[in-house]
Length: 267
Ligand SMILES: [Zn+2]
Image (tube, rainbow, N blue to C red):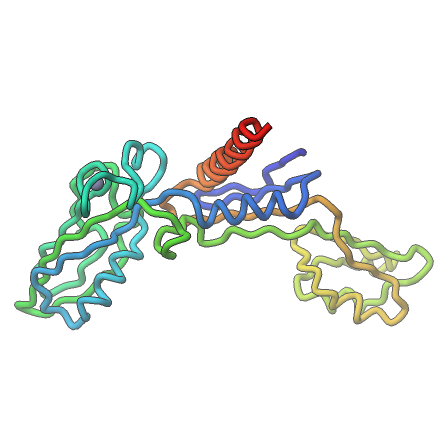
């Protein structure tokens, strides 16, 4: 298997995997979305809420605020449900609070954390608005969870792969301009003098087949390369995409280890 990074900036990474198969790539995708520990607000104790927002909506909104959850930040925290305590304790949770008076807009930066490492990823997410003399006082408890349980614990906003496109031309047939124009992503270019058509940035091809349908003489064929995939991971900023990938591989490794141990015990 060979892997090459195509693009990497901030919270996004695009890479190409050669010599892999669908079940393997799909296992990585599913684990990256569903089984990577991330911290998010789970319980909210609203002491006072004069804002126009209902308590339930406010609590839901707080739950969806991405919190810094990289390995360094959540190291040592026990996953929700695996702690010895009845509800929550410092071993399995981090507390936040908001005490604000109107008028004004309350942003994610106004969430005061008891742990300096675990805080909102972005400071400028609007939470609610307050008018003159309105007050909001609340305490929130963030817990480590998995995307399997709730979308707020999914670290990825995009986690998808597609097969690597493969475009071929019949050397004995002419590719007409309407075929080039049919491509919605403009990846085909036609040289007016030589009438030769070339492919630019093939990875942008969505394999929609518009060019094939526009070619009356079947001069173009669109398929995909077996066992080569373009994989894109974009996160909400809580965990860097490389770390999501690494953690997904660790989880897959643990699963494989369990099967190995099981096999050794049975044999
Ligand atoms: Zn606990």
